[in-house]
Length: 299
Image (cartoon, rainbow, N blue to C red; front, side, top):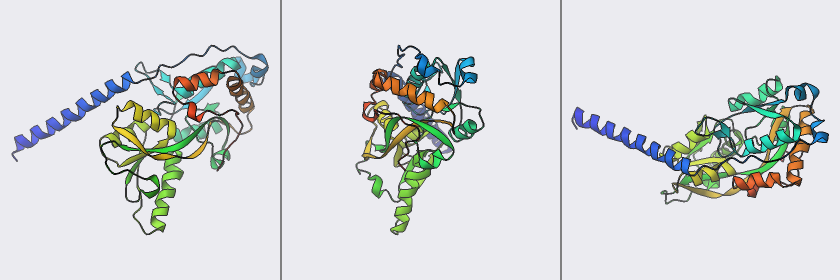
């Protein structure tokens, strides 16, 4: 192949990738869910539980990592939106506070809560016993783990038999720190090849890697995977069923009365129908819970 021919081939390949990205973005915009603004009034007896120093500011400082659709991400205008955002906004109304979202790296949110920089961490945190040693959690949803694979892959991938496969995860998530490593260790114990865990800084990067064939599968929380499948216009499909269900929780400094206030606020929304309304808007009814608790880890 001549140098010119090789150069033209590279240009064409780049154009295909760029065009594909543009098409993907157009499809994704068409499949976006419109955030919902719930009409709910301040509840004085619950708002009274908010520490005075926070109540005086009228703000709740919330650390959040994006993108992690549909839970928290930016819309076309750059505004942070998502299921978690709609629910937190409603909780803020019950408490008489306006959430002030601060974008952060996922692995710095808990340390920032401990340091007092953020009052709440909202980033699809799985409430685990290990994390409860560092912060308290207010539970608001039940999510499992769901793998995905490319639709054009004729071999159905089994998450329990994925030895030797390349599996994308978002860094520092439960899938990165617990789930995929445990599966890989089981492969090694059985004398098989370990799973090649491929870490990405954002969930969008993991999804894109799977679409482009750079990995064989992706592991993420069940609502995140379901939303990715929906938005990629049939190019991804589930790989296996949902497993390892556990609660999502908002992270709060250990012993802070903010936890009690938020638990009471989200329970109010559960009892009065606004919680279900928000979940239904995002198509996430499957993971709804009836009772919010402080520190509800199952493992």
